[in-house]
Every structure is written in C-alpha cells, then in structure tokens.
Image (cartoon, rainbow, N blue to C red; front, side):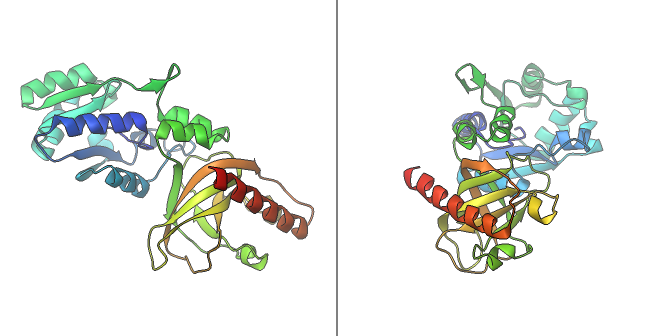
Length: 289
C-alpha cells in the first residue's frame, strides 16, 4: 500500500516483501488522484507517472490486482481506525499489508506504521513495514528522482527507479512542422506530470498499441517550442528508421541522456541543421548505452 509514484526501487522492495508474505493474491492498494493533488490542487505538477503508466509498470512486476482508491473528501476524512476497518478489512478483505517505514494514513496523517500494526492485530491482518532503501546516504524517493530529472540527469533518476524514467501517453495531433522539415515527430502532452529539464534527449521508444507495436531508438524535444510562440510543454519524439502513422496510439518514451537545453534559433534552416546534429548525437549515445 502506498502512492507508488515512479515505482522506484524502494517501492519494488515493498512489493517483493508483500509477495513473500504469501497466502493471498498480490495486490497493490494506491490512491487516485494522488493525495497531494487533492490537498494542493494549485501546486505545480509533480507526478512522475500518470495512472496508466503506473498500471503498466506494476503489471510488469507481476502484480495480480491493482486497487486505485478514489481519493477525495470521504477517504481523506476517515480516521486511521475507520480506514483499517472499512477499507482494508471490510472493503478489500486483506490478509496482510506491506508498507514503507514512513507510511502515514488517515485524517490529518494521524496514523503511522505502529498504528497500522496495532489495528491489524485487532482486525485480523498482518502488517510488514519495510525499511527505507537508499544508496550513498540518500533514501530512494520520488523527490530525489524529481530533482535528478529537473537537473537533466535522467541516468541518475534511472538508478533510483531501477529502470528508465518513462513518459507514457497518447500521440496527439500537433502543428506537423516536423514533417515539413523532414523530421516527423509523435507529439505527447505533459499534462499533470513533473517536467524534466526542458531540452533535447536521446530516447528509447516502445509503441504500446496499434499495428506498429515495436521498440526503437529516437531523439525527443521536451519544451515549449519558443520559435513558434507555444507555451504549453509537450514532448515531440522522432523515431529513428520508422515511417508510419502513430496518431491515437500510446507510446512509452524512456529518457536516456540529456543532450542540450531548449533554444531559439535565428532561422528555420538553423533549426533543421540542429535537429540533424541532435539526431546524430542521439544515435551515438544510444549505440554506446
């Protein structure tokens, strides 16, 4: 049980501890939207992955069931005892609950691990608290991942995640300028997601749906396209050696290495030349990755 934003190595340790507890199917209890979105709706986007991406990642880890509890005034108002009784015992019928050592729950975050263990004894389910995992004196956390991404260090983020940081979503229609320039791109929105450092990245891409399901390398621009007066960040991905229609399909784009900051160019031709240089650099990076 937890938020599992990013599904990083610490989260995976909690999941494996639950798997080892045995005696029942392995399920994840999480919250949607993230409680932080409910309590601070006007805060800048912070999530590392949307609900779809989290579900995909958890499925890869062999989770049998995913329970996304709707987080709103009702759930936020439950006392720790009411949450354990009405949600965990009566609602889900849990046999055992595994959480991280810093887990808190209930109204005003009043419940801690010791609270959950006491309630579990009373309601007939076991509780395991998994110590926080870390490296080099730093705990593995979603906060540390966000910091690495903000600073343009996707490889460091990947070391905490245990996998590449991936942006997943539907390909939407854009201005189609990339196609006009000879560099067609698949465009993806960044709604409600934490923004990594704006700029150009070497990426690996999985096409998750449609007739062209495949994995390939590419180069991506994450930004606001300053030459063309845009201000809503999006991700534009050019897939190497691919020629197909991806509109409406879902992609998973893994950030491998930051190449350069977003920039404004003096002319369209200068921009095209830079895109070609970016693609060449990305190919070289990915060949050695």
